[in-house]
Image (cartoon, rainbow, N blue to C red; front, side, top):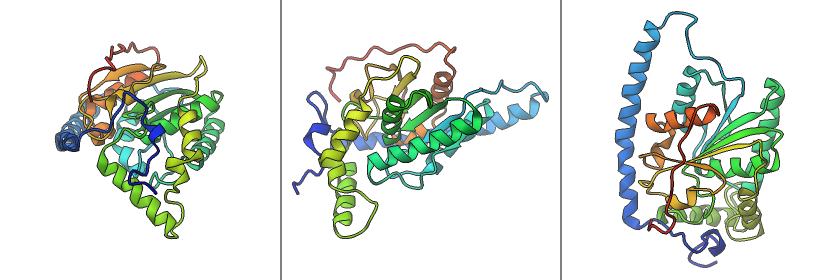
Length: 277
């Protein structure tokens, strides 16, 4: 196995791994936690002053939240609580830790969507953070009958391999542990073989006309190349957040809420893909 475990085709020309120092930008996650705490306290007081029966209109379409790589449903619990207060009916992806074969993860996600769609009698809107967004993008292309729209958060759909060296080392460790006999971690084929290629192709497949797509990204992202998150098929919305903080930063959650209500105008962001990461 080569020193770089992830296949070169997952980092097409024009994209690159963030610099080693880029991870320092992730330190703003502390500030983002603080902003969420302040926002949550303020929202609690506002709810107490709101007359009964005058809350937000409940959205007819259910919302499924999909966590990022190495993360579980708990990583999006803050976003789920806020969206519920705003009238959305949210669901977990039933993922404890998003690791393993992405093809298998996509199949699991598809089953979960079928379950929710049948229960609610409506197509589902999917919010995916990082790898979760890439999985959502692939399933949405395959099953437009289940998915009304997707919102990706810092998901490097155009170049999954354009991630920080620390993340690459985590992938390498999982591959080594899998080769040593531990199961359901990360097979080499899933990051460098046919499985990786199939997953990459699925995440770039055309979306049906009836599937809404918003890609939320941040130039402050210290984990992935932000340029890889701006899918040409999506409405691109820029926020100022760390990669890790996207799950609970109030400004990001506001953008997600707007994207989940198609009637709400969202301004697309013009992006110069020639700008350095």
